[in-house]
Image 1: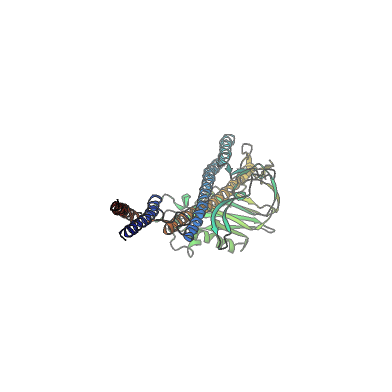
Image 2: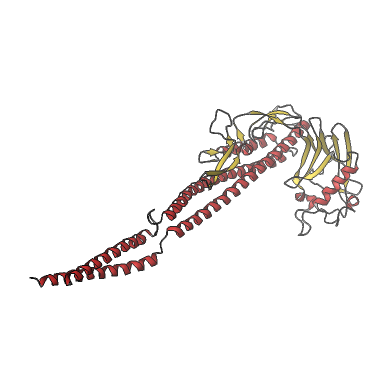
Length: 474
């Protein structure tokens, strides 16, 4: 009987030791891996969910990398556009200088040619990861060209397990500046228009250097006056005089000593409507740079519009609002001609030759290759004015391209932030499902190690007792 009890004690001690060793192995694994579910056998459901989320996070990581590359490409293109925009503004200033009597246009052309060369070099070097969105070759033979470049912007897994990727499209076709491939495109008829050389608030008449509260406004309380005639031909030829002075602004301006640009503009349009020109034929406005602009409503090559300064009223003094104060003996201070609908060979914003030397008969030109060195005399001045208008339009188009890239950049950066946040949320989800409480498991490990030592001692005692019983039969 004593031998049987001793054997039962030994078996119990052995079983206890085995259980402790199993718990010790499990706890040691959790402490070393930091996970309470490290294999499917630990918890099949949690392991499956965590594995799927890890896979999704890996895909989101690839999306984040793609967004980073896309952001870099957009930044590169935007920086190139911004640099070229400054070059165009500098070019426009040179052209305005060339309008000054006595200026050698051949020398000015040397400076302009240098700017044209710099713009092309800037566009050609705006490469990122092998992508150039400013200087392209859109020929069908160039399989690398895509009119819309797509940046992977998101990853989603549907309930049925299907995976979809969202795209952020960058319209290269609308922002390209140079294109070696020339394609025929339809063009709409345009109106006749012209723009002042200086922002209205930058003219002497609107006293840009005046004290705070009066800068950017004009003083018509005294003898200042703006006087010019507008001549429009849009099927009917009409000329009308526009005079803006104290009397004209008496009911239109709140304070004649501080007439705002809006009040001034409203007075001009009211006089145009009340004149022989009438309503809905010519509109005065301010462009994005704040310059006074006149434009016809009608379009077509037969439509013309011109502005000519006239002598001030008795006792009045002409002030400049961007068209100088010179009263020409012949010709006009500014003019514009509409264009008919048709087709043109289109390339990029800067190398599309959709302008012509209308008055000097020198053929067509683009912003990238015009030449003012041969523009002399009255006709040369008129064509130079048209070139300035063409550069103005190019500045507007490049500005629009920059706006589009800015919107793309905002969208990409916002998506990068969202993907990063989503990845962190997924990491937390995985942690909740599979991570072990290391502090708790470490404490448990020490307890199990103590239990293991005690179990070994208990087993040793049980085995010793059996040996003592056997010794009695010797």
